[in-house]
Amino acid sequence: MSKVTDQLYVEYTFTVMPVQPWVDVLAAQLGELGFESFMETETGLLAYVLEDIDSDDLVKQLDLWQYDDVELAFAKANIPPTNWNHEWEKNFEPITVQDRCEVRAPFHESKGLEYDIVIEPKMSFGTGHHQTTHMMIEHLLELNPTDQKVLDMGSGTGVLAILARLTGAAAVDAIDIDTWCYENALENVQRNQVDKVEVILGGAEQLGDRYYDLIIANINRNILLADIPTYAGCLSSGGKILLSGFYLEDLDQIKAACTQVGLEYISHRQRDQWVSPLFIKK
Image 1: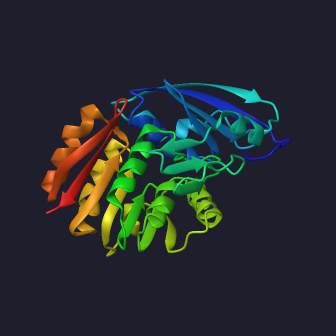
Image 2 (image 1 turned 30 degrees about the horizontal axis):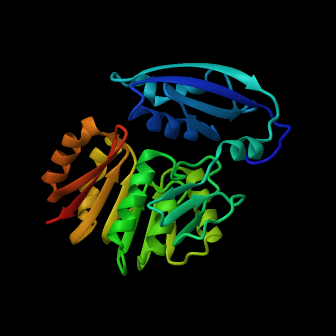
């Protein structure tokens, strides 16, 4: 929702327990039902869908209701026509990472840092504000993937794929299962005038026989645990993999899954309760 519109939207307020990793799963499933915009809250998610699409049975189609280890509740209300650009601009502030990289919107002035990335996230995840994206940016600034083939899995706005290319990657694949993220990443790649970044719609099944020197996967714990073997199979010998999207309490489980497929734990970053570990393929 990026303009003033006379179309009416319905706002759903979801409460999810536990919030992580299920809020990301909820957003993905709602996207498949036609929801267009999401905002994380402390207890769950705000989600918006066109009134013409909404029905009493719409969210009953969520697979999440069948999960035993998650509690889900919601309330909904009609909202008036809104200037969504204004609302977004009012709440979006540029960020700076290590005084080297800035992530800003088109309406912010550049600080002239080494890496100036312009992102218009609209409804996509990955502006740099979330702790996990911030840590991934820090990793990339230190790893310096010069001449490497890089995979950005769960690419969202494409900010990490763009930064990987700007920091010297030979080529980058940016993959996301969400159609809106796919379209938004295409726009942001063009906006930042980076080449050799291929944006791909889909999940781990898109990897096939592709190989990478560096893999970035900022998704959520359950998807990571399911896909780590696939990532390891696509990682070159001596290649590195950066993971995030989960809490410190989940790190041991992630380590165990990586160890089983020949990935050696090196170190991790922590920002609030979120962590981002680095592994290398033996």
